[in-house]
Image (cartoon, rainbow, N blue to C red; front, side):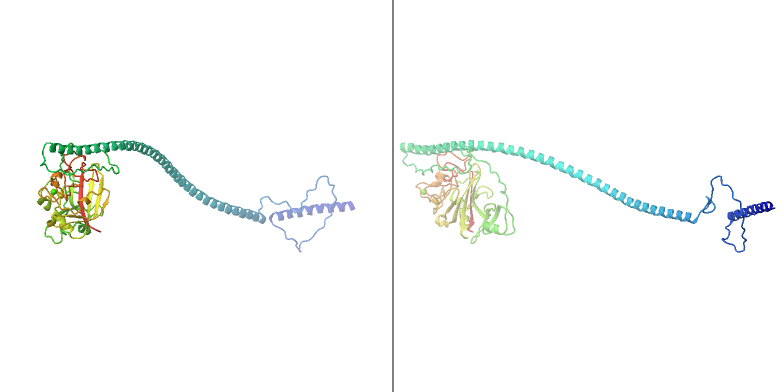
Length: 463
Ligand SMILES: [Ca+2]
């Protein structure tokens, strides 16, 4: 009996268990059962102990979770991952931005670098060009130095040769001059020897006083007693008559003070005189303002003239001329004037003789010349004529027994007769041969037988 009851109990428990388990499974699958249901009955089954032969599979967390179920935690995890990824993206974006800026900067730098390279290339080319140019210059300089050296050597050689020739010339000129003097003396003695006692005395000849100053060269040629005349050649500046509304001026100094600086012909009228004078004003020499009273340059004008001609003046104002004793007298009496004598030899060298004062006495006194003291580099050959009246072929007022104008073939303030003869015969070439010393000479510069190439006499008020 007891055995039947036990078996019935077991079967009932199994049945209930099976039913309850099946319900619970269904409920768990579709819904969660409330934690406790007060109305629910509780059963207690007694299950016979089973023999455990294998591993027991039990879960502490209840039933195994479904793999497809998305939990909040999963969502949170995903969100966290997403936000992390977003931050990373932002970071990457930032990095990308920075990189972009860097790229731009890099581009700019590259561009700048290219420009710099181009500039450096340009500068390098310039430098190269400069170096080449300098090298060329230095080469050229070296060549020039060589040429200068060669020329200097040649010059020294020529200077030495010239010096020798100059000495030979001086010696020959001296011989020629002394022979001329000797010939003249012999001629005179010869004539006197033949009973020509009535012959007029010949004035003493000026001995040669050849002063070789500076670089006098020896292109002078001896003309044997023959006058050689050239056609006049107008020099630059000559041949211009300066037309001006002003004037006439009292002298060329006034012309200069009126602002005229061009040398040329101007119209003058001396104070106290009604006579208009055409004169050459020299404004290029020594501050200008010089009135030219006499000029020789080419032998184009005959200076062997009478008193009236010398009194009134003759020649061409832009060439050879004599301004006239009357005009010179009128000009020089206007104030304190000085005289400048310019002499040019046949190598173009110019020398000067200046006299600190200059004026003429009136015609009644024979236009005596009054001179101040000498200074200059030509030597003083005019002081011996100081105080002497003017002599022409037809008016002999000199200190010589004969007429100096006859021997010297000119008109001058002769003494007996002269150390200078600026109105004499124009000889070409310098040293000349003549029976008398009738050339254009200045004894202190070249002697009596050296005829100068050109001469000018000028006056200007004393400063
Ligand atoms: Ca006389």
